[in-house]
Image (tube, rainbow, N blue to C red; front, side):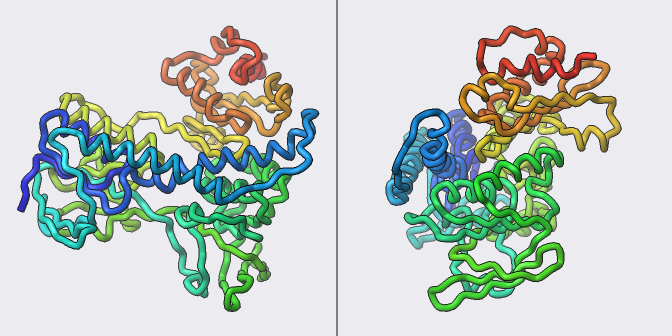
Length: 461
């Protein structure tokens, strides 16, 4: 048995930087990763998908540019080259991170599957086939999550795609059927439509991006349908059938009515499941919820002393930046003796459809539910000078403010550079800057953010 001061399981956006910092702080640390260094973000999430989104945008602009007076008579989508560019960027990030970790004093990096045999004792089945047993007083769990696969009749009989396996395609599917109308489904759906696939999206709720305000959902659907993406809400797939090597027939229930849809490929994008089962957490006293998420308090401590849960598997918002913030909270509390928690941290996010959907704080629906005294500022991108000049006026800006204090409570921006505009309002929220100050703030012309003047002008009596 090998003893360490700290064991970190999972080299994602919480585990990897935490392991390095603990080692640099003098703690003998081991980082265990069963697959690739960098976790979901680097290997299957942000890095590869946003790289491919850029290629899809270029294809879109090749068609769109005629409206700007530049006619592209002919272009082709080179999927092998798009895949190679994506793979190169992923490998550069993955290998760069791994090299830096391996050079870090006091840090061992091993590759294998970890599982607890008893409290603070971890058995690792190394990828080389050997076995190791490790022990430490401090254990940090960052196992991440995998695509959720639903139980649908015939699904296992077809070669369905997930957000991981779709990244390996080096050709354009003829007709992509997407299950799920949220982040993953919409980003991939729009991407492959732009590459040349016919795309149909099935959403079981009555609207896509159903956790957003209704006007946001409606605008997003309008934007995607304008690109000839077919969206069926209130829809569930009930059965799949495929003739040997041929078309897939999906039986679906649309508003309770059974229909059949023929497609060439199926993408499952209904959510993600925490990778906690293989850890055998029952041997440690670490409690999980009914979905397998590691239960943690606001300091990210589990029910077992000295064991912490970070990132996508702790049931919090599954975003890279939240995982990274988990690491900083745990590290600063443990090593720098601070008293930080997750209670009041902001949870900004951005969906990289085109245009982007950026959001921070509460929306109008939540303000209404909470019975707040609020006002809503709303500005169509068609009234934004920069959007008009660049020829993309899809979407709108929206902010919820406190009617009395004039503080910004939340913002949603669906539009070009929506995430960047949202971030300006997040900084205002962090600094307690009221909307009336932003109304008269001097921004450089003609930036997108300059139109925050106009956004809050809509609140003037």
